[in-house]
Amino acid sequence: MAPEKMMRAAWSGKVIDGHSHAGVSLKAYALGEYPYAQTIEGLHEQQRTGGVDATVVFPFSADLYFDPAGFAEGQLTPAAAPLSPVPYGAENRLLMREIFDYCPELSSRFLPFVSIDPAREVPAQLQALKELLKAYPAYGIKVNPVGCQSRAGALLDIGAPLLDFAEERDLPLLFHVTTLPGEEYSQATDIFKIVERRPRLRFCMAHGLLFHRAWLDRAEAAPNVWVDTAALKIQVESMGHEIGRTLSAGDFLDVDYTDHRAVMRSLCARYPRKIIWGTDSPAYSWICRRKQGEGIYYDFRLKGFYSDEIAALKALTPELQARVGGANALDFIFGPQ
Image (tube, rainbow, N blue to C red; front, top):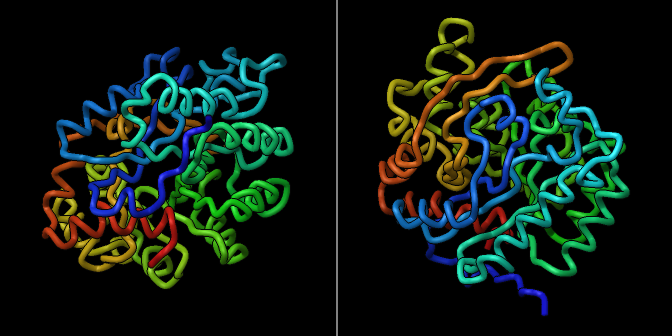
């Protein structure tokens, strides 16, 4: 018998991490980058140390669809005979098996999202998802355009059936988003076009929209958009180095970028019903070389800890902790009450 989806009431009042990963990135492992893997059991141990009751989780990568020969150059090229017949196909299935078959005693602590590639093998992805969701419950869809080197904007044309699938099943979508130039796959401009075209869908924009004031205000004004804080400590650290130097300070929130907890307090005070707390575990550190577009690469060397993300949540008042550490995530996943 297939496991049943737990409805909103089962998660109400719990501390919820709205953004995490399980699985492996073969590209990261092959190149000695960090992090490269995480298990559901490992995530549970983090929950225990951090006082977290439940976690939204999705696959780490779609690497089993790609040719490993390209990993050394940071290039994701579909393999001639891929180990996964569609992007994320094997990874989505293994995530579900890990939660519901291998660790069923932990299954009540996880809200699995399936991942999609916006453009590649769309009909085959849909067939794989339909078969998977006959056997396991999904609570949403994760889209990481830069992670699979596929433009988010493809969901407005070739990838549109994937949005139809989400709408038919009332599955919200969580996007990796950037508001900075130099990354061609995950631009906020493209993703907000999707928001406008699909008002019946619910969306979450990851990584605080990098604290860009105009984009945050636009998310605030949209009834179907939320924003998560995934990997807050390293996002604050990275942006703090650039705002006022390579980036115009007037475009971003006027907050104390020397302390990610202060940024969290300011962000949640300004947008209390929109912010969703998430750790990005294990990607609260990010040490890698990432392809950002055609011929565009960027070297990251950002180090954080799970405890940094817990500290951000704990820096809030109890009322805000309950809202951004639980209620807002439930509004995004199940719809506002």
